[in-house]
Amino acid sequence: MNIQLPKLYFSKLMRAVTEFRMIDEEDRILLGLSGGKDSLFLLYALKCLQEKLAVKFSLAALNINPMFTEDFSAKGMEDFCSSLDVPFKSENVDIKSVVESSGVSPCFTCSYFRRAAINRLAKEMNMNKVAYAHHNDDAVETFFMSLIYSGQLATFSPVTYLDRSDITVIRPLIYFREDELKETVKLHGVTPLPPLCPYDGNTKRQKVKEIIEKLGDDIPDFYDHLKSAMRINALGELWPPEKKRADMKDDYFRYMNRR
Image (cartoon, rainbow, N blue to C red):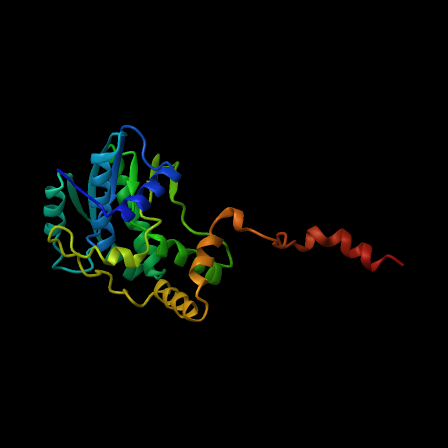
C-alpha cells in the first residue's frame, strides 16, 4: 500500500512525532476514532508513518459511540479502516444518560467518560499508547479557556503518561491548524460524520473560539501570541503565590506594633 501525504503535512507530522518522541519501537497504538475529519486524517497519517518509519509499531482504531443518536452507524469508519488494513472496534458507552443526569458540564462529562472507556479498552487490547486527533487550535483554545475560566495558565500536553492506567497519550496533529484539516474532508471517498453532540456549537469552547477569531481581526498576531505563550519558556515576571492570613500574621503584627 502506498500512502502519501503532502510534503508540508508530512513535515508537520514528523515535527511533532520527533520533537516529543511520540512513537517508539514496538509501540502498540490505539487511535480514538470519532468519525470526524480530524480523527480520520490522523488514522491516515499514522498509517503513512507506519509504512515509512524505520521504527516499527502496530496500529488499531477504536470508536466510542456515546449513544446520543439512535441511528448511529460505524460502517463508514469500519470500511475506511479495512481499506488501510487497520483493525477496528466500536463500543457503545451510554454517555448520553450520564450527561443528562450528572448536572455537570456536558463537555467535561462526555470527555471524561469517553477517555475512561478508551483507556480501559486499550488495556484490554494490550495497547500501550492512545492517539488523539487534537490539533493546534484545540491546544490554543484550551489554554485560553483555562486562563479566562479558571485563572490558570495550562493546556494539554503533546505527550502525557497516565500512571494509573500505564497508558501514554500522544497527539500527533498538534502542529496542524484546523483549517488545514478541513481540506481533508474526503479521504478515499469517506465523508466524515456530522457532529453527534447535541451541544455542538453551544459550548464554552465554541465561545472561546469565536473570541479568539474576533480578537484576531483586530490583533493580527493574537493567535500566534497565544500559541507562543503555551511554552514554559514564555513565562515572564509573575507574582508569587497568594499568601494566607496565617502566613502573613508575623509581618502584620510587626507592622502594627513597630512603634
